[in-house]
Length: 318
Image (cartoon, rainbow, N blue to C red; front, top):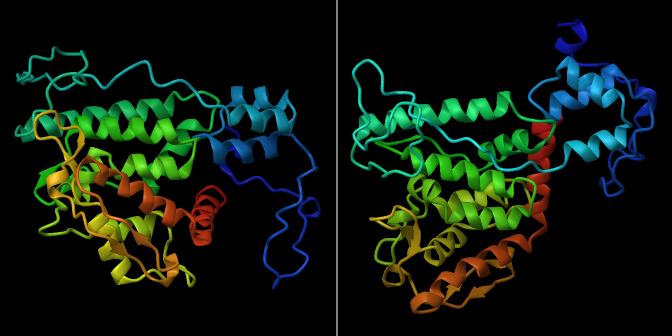
């Protein structure tokens, strides 16, 4: 591997426009790059949008214009055609659900109470996901999915329990489905995702005893952030937690479902940061629609776009 692939390429400063004022807001954006498009620039781009810069990909994109290269890299790719496999039925171990060696366990039982099996399936999933990264095509899709996984952080271990292997696979597929799409739609999908419900205790958030974990992280980490202009309050966290009561995991199928009997049906009042908005409470199945009102209210704030743009910039432009 050449030195050019191991070091950050040097881009001539004469091709990078300086801001008109260091104190003025950056409302006009950056000027379009019009400089050289050769090996250093191609490597620079690929190391940010892919998981590295292979010789074959460098030569491929050098044969195209910069605009053609960016357009191609931003094209979504099809969902994976493979699945995590039973790579763990070795050394005398047998999958208790009957999955044979080198067969997928995705469509079998969750095996909720079998800690050893879940640990093996989580390891199997991680191996499979690493393979998706190593063998990804010339697309930003897989790298961006990893970014969103860092954005909506979860963990396989929660206290003494484990997020189930199937939850992890479904969580990955949800991130991948929305990776190049609408951020608000993704946020709703993750809000109702069993892995996230399990990880931040959404499955135990009920009207009799509201759990604020996800409501807090939704605002502090995932949307509004902690910038100087993110002035949501503790009362906003509590109100959001009430909105989210009743969203849980089916104890039989281990999929998302809304339990209207556990939902707080009263009105929820928010602070001046959200324009003193009152989200109307509903009884029955209509209570599930309150999450849409909550996200509409949150995403109406300019700070949300600032926060996520900062995170994208810091992640991909080190």
